[in-house]
Length: 316
Image 1: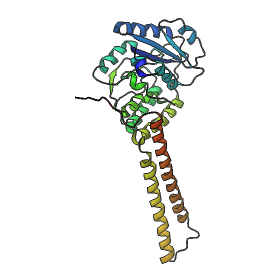
Image 2: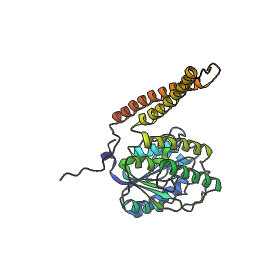
Image 3: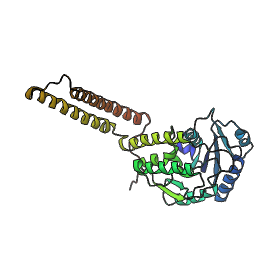
């Protein structure tokens, strides 16, 4: 769907839900109250991620609501992506479905966004979570700052406000929803942050576990690579290949010097094999870099994109 067709309302509030039968009714009431006070046109989108309780049945009694039902549990990232592609708002608000985010803070996000930011991320400065959850989150935030060099304190906070047009151009996979600000920042969009409130979970059980931490770390590595080498993978793989070939060639060259001028026997030494292995590995890296470069160019071409993003054009 064309972006101009999409942006007919001011706000789209997108919430992924999974087995939240005890929360959806109150969450919906709070979202509607918060949006009504803003006096803006809005839509509320709940994306059910394959719930096995009465979540869907309770959602069907709520108005106004757009309910997107996934066929099974695909994960929070997939649920967010489905909600984004169904949304029509100029600004997209995201939050969790567990009532730990406060819909009243939507106003804070929008006020910060008026300062010129394309993305405003919530910062749960005083979190109401268990020690283990806060420990894993802070560790992930530290790694994120090192690898992605972004400026936000709390990437795991789902309460965010996005430029709708920018967000609908992003395809999400894995556990990448927490890195959306970093992905948009790669395209030149500005990212801000505001302190928001955080409440303890009252109903239901947390869906966070160590497996999601591992998946998130793997996605973080991917985004690091994409951030630095998305438009030039040959520089990464080709450069590494050249280094390996030089090291391997140096080892082979020294072995030849020992054999020809020093009379050393090489039959029982492993270094010639290591040298040949490094040269072959370097050649493979270099070839892989060429193939990756071709694949990246085809990616941009097939998606009618380039590795840059135009903010605006002014003609005098």
